[in-house]
Image (cartoon, rainbow, N blue to C red; front, side):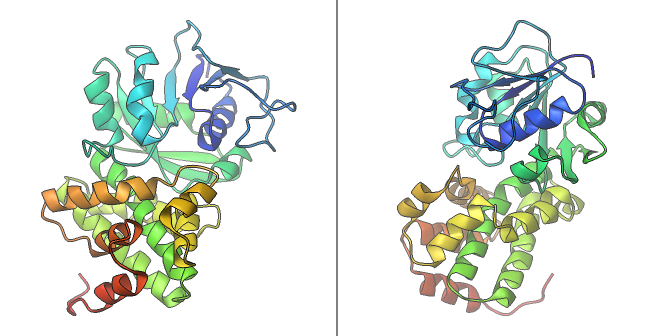
Length: 320
């Protein structure tokens, strides 16, 4: 790659993406609100990975035309960062979630705020530290235009980080957002001592719930069986590095939502996404019992025992 790449967001995910982009041969400019590195030249959220010469940290984007921009900021703050994007450059949204006030997905927010910017979204089962370390991984890069999805996938793929092109933006974004909510529920299940059988059942029924809603939004069931659905769900619901799983684990062990949030090293998107996902499901007439229960539990409207009883006492039915 000859043109530079901009990465917006100096957290763990943004840092990992900057390290990955530098492996494609691109000069990378990593934008952070506070452009400060540690004495060893690493970013604070991933202190064990010093940045190479091909990654320059900056508080102001340089006046050069990049091949693309990767945005790794929380969904709830995405709109505030979009004004600094250069016009006419592909923007790959690497955040997962739903805007609380509007129920908008990342690509919707981009279209609303910056209609002059071409959008795509990157999602998949990826922990930041493993991407930073250059361990093998894969993800989906979705865009409304198949040519754009293919071009950006080829632009950013490496032998150790494979990107698969897709045009199912609805399915990819819904899967990426909803899996965080199910991951909180998964952590609660283990934290409360309900067992691995219960977690496996919850993940499976959670996937069915996500697929129903994705289909109602125009997504494809096959997408939810792939990297942006099942793959991301499995990693987030079982991986010890998952902040949403950690959040649920603390809740299941009796910690309050406020205290659990304060104990995390970063943002647990599932906490803010749960209510938004619930509202979205109601708008489309889709049943989401797991999301309903975990949202009510995190808000303190029901106890864990009540949530468990609510799920286990649902009428028996066919699996599909």
